[in-house]
Length: 92
Image (cartoon, rainbow, N blue to C red; front, top):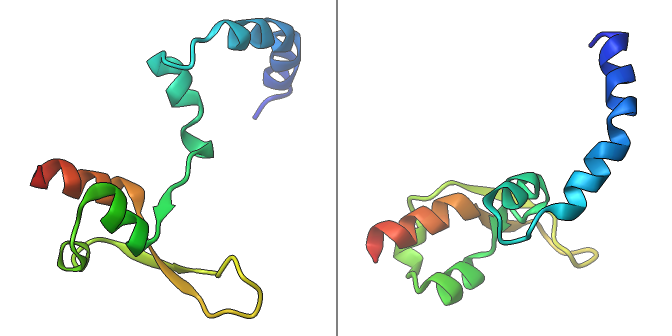
């Protein structure tokens, strides 16, 4: 990245803060800004409870192993939230 990009970013910082305050949380642009801060993974139990899916529905979805939120516990299996939402939309 060029130095001029950094300088332009610093000059526009105050304007960006003003624009960010104006965004309505229900606005699609505001949701796009928060995509990286959203939860990307979901546990199997929560997927079944929140999206009315069966364990057999989750078998073909992408999954990954993450560290447990509890100390000295084994890794937990979590599913990609996008995949669970897509499965729910396809099924219902």
